[in-house]
Length: 192
Image 1 (tube, one colour):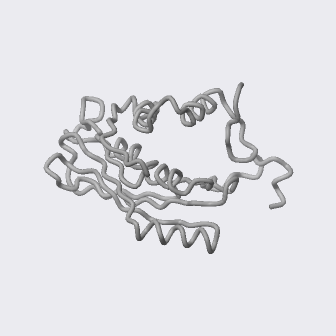
Image 2 (cartoon, rainbow, N blue to C red):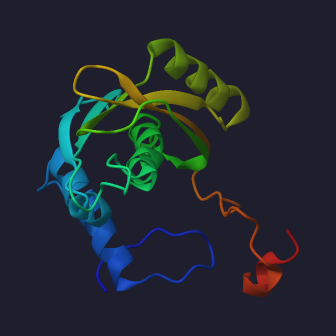
């Protein structure tokens, strides 16, 4: 394979991982198109409505269709969770470059049934960004929590997402949750 694939220490790379990271680093595709072509989002028919150049504001439409509709006639919660999960981490990875970033925890509060297409709205406030920058400067790490939501076309909040993101030094390898069983770690990592 050509090119470098970044993974946690000790993990094997796959051709799929190589392909996804190659597309991600590509300058050919816009950030909007990269998100829309991401296989899970593509299959869910997600449409990116807005990504600010600095990634502080993101809006995406999640359509209600025969596949995303549950027996009750509203959108499956899993569809919303699949789209809501990576958004805060993606934004943080673009804003705080050079750090390892992942979703640490997420909770979803379903407030009104997703009876129509939903719009995900994420916005990072300047005050929150400043707090994160200060924590990274002082501690070298930060674990901020973001609140954002899925909205119905009339502006009603359908689903509140609370997402905690881990921002750690580049190469941080203890990112596996739950902890990895020792039998899967390389022998030179067992003493850590």
